Amino acid sequence: MDRFETDYLIIGAGASGLAFADTLLEETDAHITMVDRRDKAGGHWNDAYPFVRLHQPSSYYGVSSLSLGRGSIDQSGLNKGFEELASGQEVANYFHTVMRDRLLQSGRVRFLPMSEHLGNGEVRQLLSNKITQIDVRRRFVDARLLENGIPLTHQRKFHVAADVACIPPNFLSQKAHLHGYFTILGAGKTAMDSVLWLLENGADATQIRWVVPRDPWMINRAFTQPSGAFYNENYGGTMRQMEAMKEANSIDDLADRMEAANLWMRLDPSVRPVMIHGPTVSIAELERLREIQDIVRMGHVETIEPDKLRLAGGACSAKPGTLYVDCTARALGHTNTWPIFNDDQIALQMIRLYQPTFSAALIAKIETSLDSDKAKNALAIPVPMTDTVQTWLVSQIANTTNQFVWSQHPEIKAWIASCRLDGFGRAAREVDRNDPEVQSVFNRIKEVSMPAFANMKKLATA
Image (cartoon, rainbow, N blue to C red; front, side, top):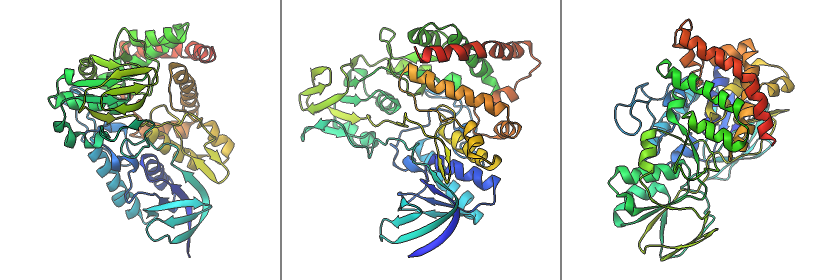
């Protein structure tokens, strides 16, 4: 049995594991070993459907040391006027480059692909069954908690009759021309992408049925633009969000105020969403999604038959020969949290909402900057994935608490200010802080932040 030593053993070489390793490499002289069941770094991006794109700007995704994309503004398409969104293939290639040219070239990173960690540093090579014992001098880092559900490989929770065509979106471009009707299953970003792919590639809205188990709140992409040119949307949006949190008298009232502030959007103005998983869309995308009129709202699908669709809330007829597109895998499904720093373990989780790679990179910085696990955990309250508006509030409380304690720690505050993965500080650096309108927004955020936080805690436990 082979045996070697390492300082950090990172289990999982997906986006979060790579972001952690990149910052650890920059901040320390540690030796790092990464283990992954896939043959390449990049996690779920290696199995992504071909038309997937990031739904937040490329400029603050990936690892801290290497930019993703060209830093351009899209001049056409449904993302026109906003910062570019890298395609799935671009993201996968980017992470392959991070591993090859950044991590491995350092001489301090070892990558064990097609391998699984059995526990206590014992690693099995999947092809040969060869066992290697890795003696870890500092920490085990579990990067699997942030692993996304993958349409291509997830296990369906519904039955499909043998003569029904049901595919993951990975095969939509190959199979779509063989069918005259399409049914999209799911209400998340993958489902939205699939609807938009069909419409943008010539399908008529009357050919598409959309099974929406729970209507989602969607985030207006204008709110997520990081540059000073979008200051009114970025920091102005933060101000309006704080005001909504301060004034809301119920969960529904908060959602209505977020919508009125143009921060959240819904598919149908007459249907109240009950789910928020953080999908980020442009108004142009929303307008196209609203072209679909045949929307089935009877809960999750249970059985698909050639002429019938059975769902938790009832059944409806189906057109024979329909192509069903399974978009029911859930991304970032963890809603439970654990202490991030615990003896010889680090459990990577979000510490900023909907920002897994920033979170992983900052956790690595916290690891290198403080001595005790107690002090480290005080700077890294886990932020669970959201499901409903109430759980979004719970996550925002942890998110806001983290933001405050980071601002009180000079080294962490300085690191965040220089980190390209911080999508929210750049706008403030690119505007004139002496501009009266800019000052007004900053002052208003300071004014309402504490009463907003107090009301958030009240609503979250109501």
